[in-house]
Structure formats: structure tokens, C-alpha cells
Length: 212
Image (cartoon, rainbow, N blue to C red):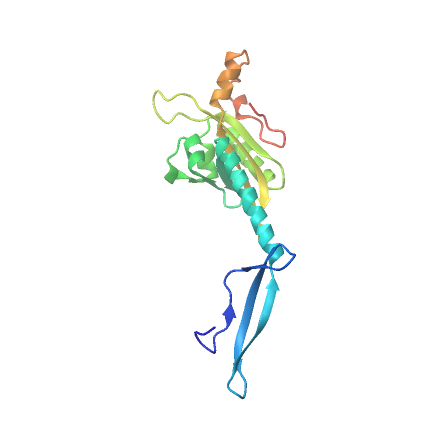
């Protein structure tokens, strides 16, 4: 307030206040100075109660932290599919699931599906399913990845994603997770469950989806 008699005061962050008999609240103060005839400076402004907003932000932050903890505990990778742009974004763990370096996390849908050991007709069906999933269906795929090097063991990856409407209310993305299910399939095989043969290992993309 002392910096300039013509500056407006707008607190960039909410201020915590504790009133007698009440819980801690949050206020934002906006004010503008003016001078009276006696040259005395007077500030006029508004105080806005933003307690509810701050509480919602705190709740959202808590949910996000719990979600991140669950993702890390389950060793899930995060994946975002943009049906309109035909692009796929993978985080570092999802890149590892797909046998990619972290710097290779941006792919076209065609490049991404080419990582899976599935035939061209099955890839075409999955591309169509991605488009339908943007309307609300769950997209899922669980099948082996293509070998990237000689002697590399076969690795099976499951991806599940659902449509999310963006802030503009129009754009639709598929947001989901990937996980390495190789160990699970090996346990099933060891206990007598037969490992399905290609191309049925693609899993059926759709609201039911096949899960190992």
C-alpha cells in the first residue's frame, strides 16, 4: 500500500483469517487508493470470502495425491489418447511398459498400435474402437508387445482408458493406464490356465474388454 498512491491492491493469494468461534477462513482483498480534499489517502475496495473455493482446492489436491500414490503402488503407467488428433501420450512408466525410452512418449495412434503384436485388421478394428470410446465406452487392450531386440522375453501389456471431457466442454480425450501383466499371465499358465494364442490375445476392445 505504501509503494504508490495510484497502485491498486490485489492480493495474489488468499489470506487466511481466524475469527472467534469460527474455523479458519480465506479472503481475497482488492482495493484502490484515492485522495480526499484534505490530501488524506483513502483506500476503497472489496473483501471476497473464498473459503469454499480453497476447501475444494484442498480436497482436489488430496484426491490427486491419493490417486498418484495408488498409481505408483500398482506400477501403472499413464496414457492419454486424442482421437481427433490421432495421437497418444505416454508417461515415463508407460514408455517402459511399451519398450520405449522416456523421450519417445509422443506417438501417433498408428505408431502406438504398431507396438502391439497384432495383425493389421485387428489394428484397424482398434482404431475404430478408439473413435467409439470417445462417446463413452471403455477402451481396453491386453496383448503382447512386439520384440524390440533379439533374445528379449515376450512382454504383455494391458491398457484401459475412458473418455474424459476437457474444460472447453467439447474436446474428448481417452485417459487411462497401462500395466505390465506378463507375470500375471505366467502365473495363470503355471497354474493351468492356457495362454491364448494370437490374434485372440488382442483382447476385445470395448465396454467389457478382456482382462487377464
